[in-house]
Length: 111
Image (cartoon, rainbow, N blue to C red; front, side, top):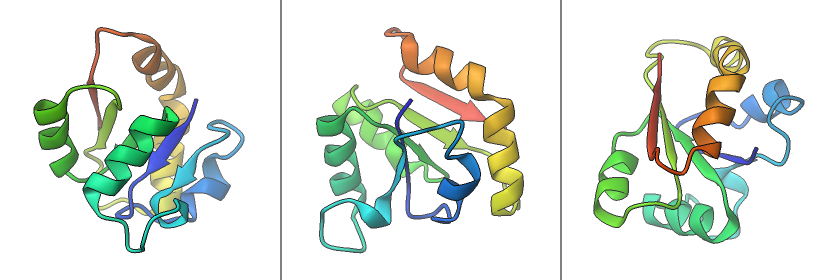
């Protein structure tokens, strides 16, 4: 399960979720000029079979404009720290896996 964490999520999340979401990357590590723009993150995710995980509603707009892939997961966790976000993601791992596997779904909101 390959997640691409958007720049608006701390890169430290990789250490906290690495066992549950192996092969995931953070936007600050992809091979584009940094800071990566949303469209560059989108194109990288599309070309490399990642699901984008973000707090940013702009990816929902890109999804509606361009379609899938990639799929998008939007965190609606508001004022949570990185550890709390990682705990939420790990607790929802089965839901995330099911979402990624289902070809009929495009977007998932996690609260």
